[in-house]
Amino acid sequence: MAVFIVIVLLLLCSSATLTLAATSNLNSISTSNDSICESMAISQGYVCHEFKVTTEDGYILSLQRMPVGRTGKPADKGPVLLQHGLMSDGATWLLNAPDESLAFILADNGYDVWIANTRGTTYSRGHTSLSPTDSAFWEWSWDELAAYDLPAIFQYVHNQTGHKLHYVAHSLGTLMALGAFSQHKLLNLLRSAALLSPIAHLNQIPSPLTKLAADLFLAEELYWLGLREFIPGAQAASKLVENICDKPGLTCSNLIDAFTGPNCCVNSSKTNSFLDNQPQSTSTKNLIHLAQMIRTGKIAMFDYGNEDENMDHYRQPTPPVYNITNIPNDVPLFMGYGGQDTLADVTDVNLLLDSLKHHHPDKLVLLFRQDYAHADFVFGVNANQLVYHPLMAFFTLT
Image (cartoon, rainbow, N blue to C red):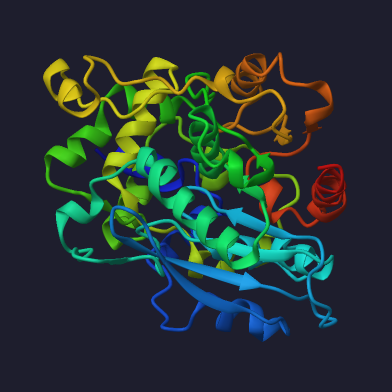
């Protein structure tokens, strides 16, 4: 059980360098009543507005908009939607300095920036009939994020702006989009998609601990014990981190690097700021779904574990597969991935790219950084020059 807690604590999390010395701060998930706009954007001199979006299945999501940059000039380059990864929220895109954080950079370059927050995160814990204390509130995996959260936010932004969207995602946000695009969803509202540290195939993840957690069905154990919401910052999780790091042969001097790869360019002095906002809650069912993908190598919907339940949900004995080859070949795609990333590892990314081998060459832009790991793409101090400038150049071509 302890092994699983350590692994899921950081599995696919868009976070920054987290050392063992900082594990005592893991219970510092943001409980402030301040909005993301007030605490992170307006305080930096930016205009920022808060919105609430209700999904078809009743979840009430927080959404931020930054319609102008620091100069006050209104955006003239269209809307960009930023989607965070697992155990993160929209603050991901605002935690670095304005000249290092993608949301600020886009706003300063004339884009109408919208920031998504998926269900279960600090500012997206509302529902039309359920409370987060209800187990039913947490009965979802990334299937529902792709089927309900993304469409609701896409449609809302389109309705407000009258324009198709550029979409930028990190980690789990890329998987949500790939799943939706493979079913031909959202494409009528999409202008382009930029996928940073894209995950789809997961069974080549190099981390032996991550594979062990999946192979031992430890997420399922937590679910069977009644844990529907997984709160990675709880004191119990922090204690288990300390216990597991005492195991022989495990190197936990830098936990985030142990699971995401050795991030080259994250400012370690920002650790406390990151810990104030990350990691966020997710559903245990979501972790089960990811573990299933690690075990099977398939990009498929949640497996309910037996043919009868799958028949009830899908009208077939096995979960439907998300067929990446169904993504239209003319969808403009930008993919940034790193040679040191142990979550979106190169082998798995190459499998994804093989599924896109018939994509129109002028519609698929690849950016590979040999020195980058998972967190560098959102927290790297040099990502502005190495990733975000090429990303904005890609936007101008679409």
